[in-house]
Length: 440
Image (cartoon, rainbow, N blue to C red):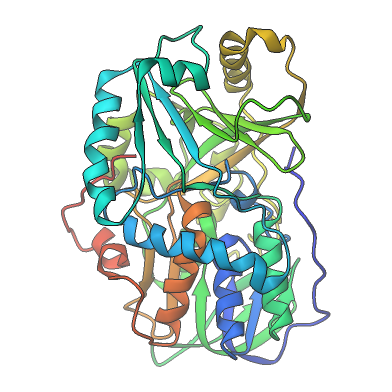
């Protein structure tokens, strides 16, 4: 079952031309479209399904700087600043609140890692406090686990996945952008090594520049143009409760995470537990991803599922002459994993036995697009002038989305970038560079 997402209207027809075409109506594409339109560029935002329909509405909603990989940290600082400004600028609530994030752990190694990261955070004025055993237990009861300590980060927070991307897209329209849903991009139009337009199912759009922000579909979209982007989808599961008593705004343990929503319900999940399904694309990029998957397979199950036969990594998707593959998959909606649903609920009940039966409203699956080093790609594409790729967020895309959209927008118009783009270049993944896997 797909999570509920606020729906916004589409413009009737795509324009014949635009300064910039943004492909993908998730948090990154919508943020980039808003920031570009606000500056006066003509923007067409196209989305094969509806805005926010895939991973941008299927995540926890966390917006954090704490424990970021050092390559992502400057971008997370900018993202938090942008989250602060969006609602007053646009006049719509994105659900962003600096409510604080609370972590608890039963592992000394985890507590030591949190404590050691604080020296990095201090350089960027990230405030956090290590919690004692009793403080952690007061915030998250001990039952299944005995906490040895925790972490509290007062200035990090959360936003509402159901609201954020649609609000940004609506903000882009208010500045003159056009929004085109149920409008799949079929491919790029290239001339002399430069992008000059986009072929869509609703017609051709001439363009000076294009942003590919298509999430887990990015590798498949780029492949027919001779662009290699090593990408893997990791299948995850989340639940949403019915509105219930307030247990805290945003809580994390090794057994579960809980994020309170504006209506008083909670999004529930477990960090790091997921499925990797054998796929045609996965076989192609096995060598690139083997080091990361070997490091993390203790929490990830490997198997065969629907992804082999449908979706962005499937055998049909590998047939690059099928330019209808995107409109044939309007909304990627993987089934939630029943074993993980049961584990999430059991862990919550063990920690909060006073709740009795937790009323679950819905459950959904998602496909998180990952890179071999778990760091996003935000990059000009060397082979095609005027094309920028922003994808491979490895589970960090929602909170980082505003900053990623901002950096991508600057690359599109050759502005001085807000952060050093070197760590996010696409070439690192394809030129044999030694990769440093992010510790997340």
